[in-house]
Length: 413
Image 1 (cartoon, rainbow, N blue to C red):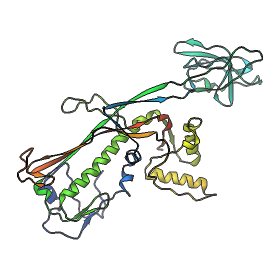
Image 2: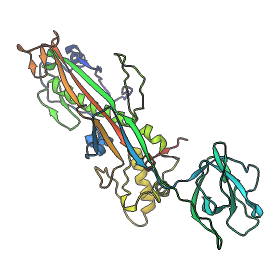
Image 3: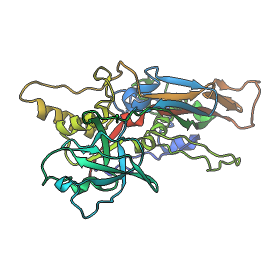
Image 4: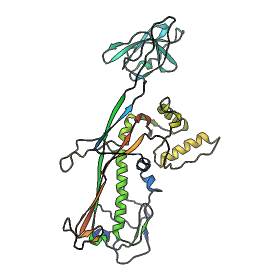
């Protein structure tokens, strides 16, 4: 973030990272032999729950899995029926079905049988008239429109590549010997892996015990009244570490080939954003109650029982305000609505936090200074008048079924 350039700013203090010396504190006008009645405040959100919502809604709510390896697998039972997809337009330039003539579509699977009534849109019901014929990477189906209007025909757009065709039911003639198709679901296996997160800070003995000119406040609002750098440094360290892990859970990308300093791969697992690439993604210009309702129906209709449709939405402040306004616009003639941060929900969760058993580790590399004070005869790891604190964690995120998730993305003009 760029430095503030407001005319109200009268002084800025230089930033530094990782290793703190007395010079850093002096340059920031924070090292001082006297104490003054001042509090250095920082702008945080209402609570750490709001700072790290994904961690809070998974690990914080007990939705976790512990594993002993770096990778993990899970099985997901697919739907027993799904649409077939047109993979070639073999009626291009025609008016399919006009005058009661058979027409052809090419789909990706040999599932539908003669008598099945299929549709790309419930305005067009089409009966399969013959067994599908294998053709290259797909199958050709011969169809008839289910009506008696000789001038009606299928909209040619519905024969184009990518159109989905679904079965509604099967119908037959008197005395017929054919019957409709039956499809079966099979479990699929999914695989993911953890990411390893590490963070450290170092502080010299002089800096650790240096009195500061200001009191310091952490994200929880606690003021450190002994005015020592050490307590603030640890508080800031943990705030940043949890935020970094939260960002990793959201934005990390799968990688197994990027080498670390010792030649081994710095392997990373997918974050939510990568997982959602296969979900329901919709771009919008204006958020309305109708758009939200239709979008959610596309995800859940016929797939998830009404009683289990507990929906959690993640958004920023602008998204929350836009959602609130959409609900208010739709309901203002009838009732008053309220928007609030939700800390937990009942029901089965589709997302959980995964961590490695004993993957969380914390330790100190101490010299003449230790985290507990000056070293007075204890063992040392180095000859410095300083110590380093290191934390190590291995975790990841799992979405059981990404087809029950999605993104509503504001389309920039």
